[in-house]
Amino acid sequence: SAMVFHQITDQLPKEIHVSVPSDRAPAVLPVGTKRSEWSAQMNPIRGHLAPEIEGMPIKWHHLEKFFGFKEYTPKGYPVRVITLEKTLIDGLAAPEWCGGLTNVLQAWVNAKDAINLRSVLTFTDSQDMGVLRQRVGYVLEKLGFSDPHLDMWTAKAKRGGSSKLLASAPFAPVFSERWMISLNASIAPLEEAG
Image (cartoon, rainbow, N blue to C red; front, side, top):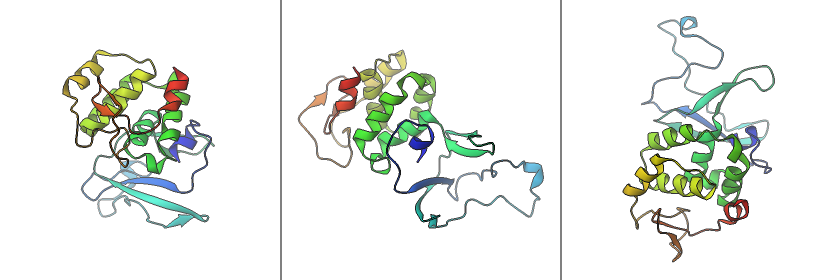
């Protein structure tokens, strides 16, 4: 659903994905409110867990690391939405929530000129997942991005285990030597963009 908000996909979502802080994460104030509006006895609600909204199923994500969100006002009222860069990163981490890996890679291509590279690097490092660095780094370089930070990531890249472009698919014999990652899914959108 964030991919639709940022206009980097033409697929319509079949469900709305909503992220809220987990019980172990600090509470986040509802959009448009201030801490001074909340009394000591009344804490901000962590999120109403409705199963759907206007017939559209909602997939709730309780995040311990709640970051990468920004307030936007697309229709004159504030909404909190995951940023473009965090949306792209999360797409590589969980492509099944985003219409599949081909749609995720096409979203990276569509967003190429709007990507803030520093934000991508920072958000990816914040996740502290080696395989995610491999996926993001591989995609960034296929799109023509370069940065010394990417060289630091490749120095730590390891083959095997979960080092696959698509976690849910089996290993493929084709792999990126630089990123030590099995290219076990079609990368056609990246190839066509190059």
